[in-house]
Length: 241
Image (cartoon, rainbow, N blue to C red; front, side, top):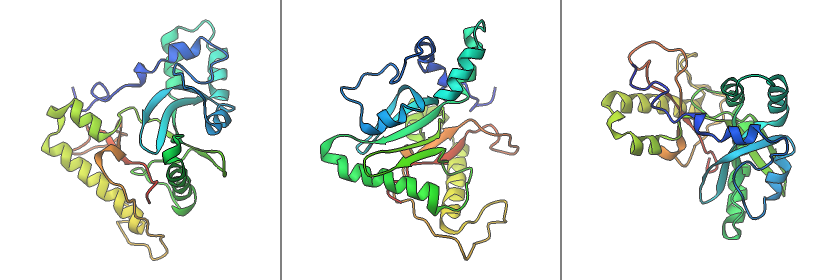
């Protein structure tokens, strides 16, 4: 079995989707916050929250699924076994980020999320497989949220602490190579597809907060070669860019 098959990557089957599926009225999933922010209330008009994924000093991240998609799957899945229904829902999971509502961090948190939305949706003229993709966003003075793909592997920092024996020299080299690809794209628009040519018209972008916690793992796409059994590494969190 490949060293880094999906078995080793944190799987979305741990999401409490079974709780979500059973209720037509679910808005805020299985977690209970004292008062949802205006951004979360706005987001809940179009998405179901499944669970809280994590929290930092400036943002909270949740797993969610679009309501329109989930409702279609549930209506079409009546009589279908739950495993099949859950698998269908998992394919449409997204991660949503809200600025941290704590008053002491509010201004900086709002600024970072606004900046991340701006960079991912307006500054970068193209998408890249090593850069987290903005699937949807809303940014006004009072409401801000950003959705990106839900990457079931979590971040490299957490993975390393849970599976230290998997940090082989080859895997570390793989991480380094893919992060160089990400940084080359941000700085100059150079990609493997264009022969790593620097583009004169490219808006040079500096990430500003590179660490293992901002490197996310995604089950590998079809790939051959020495690192074909390793997960892809995706650079996320552009609040300081």
